[in-house]
Amino acid sequence: MRKTTAALAAAGALALVVTTAQSAAADGHGRGWYGVWANGVNVRSIDGDCIHAPSTTNCPSIIGQLNSWDEVMVYCQVPGQSVGGNPYWLMVQPRGWSQYGIVSSYYVENTTNWIDGVPGIEGCVI
Image (cartoon, rainbow, N blue to C red; front, side):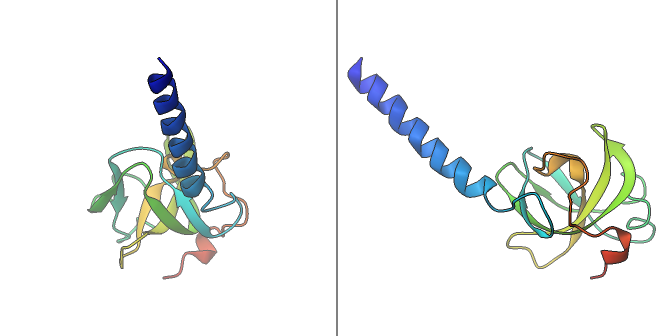
């Protein structure tokens, strides 16, 4: 019983360290690194009308996928198709990628739909 309890305590401490390191990447205000909380999140190419009216229809080209614990640099946000009740999409560059893309803000860790301090469409310049 003691070995099991000690093992669970150690695993919990490790999980706390990993969670803290990942979620501390951005403070929820402004441009910066933000975590993704879901698996299989599509990163879409910013082509044509995509940046002006982001949706699965206007942004059909998928350039890759993200999973939970992945991080993205958020550059700007624009209104578009609502996903999970969140009407914003984010222009991002995933950590380790050389390419930019757009993802639904719904899948990016933040306490509100709009990320304070991140510019809107006027800031979406690559």
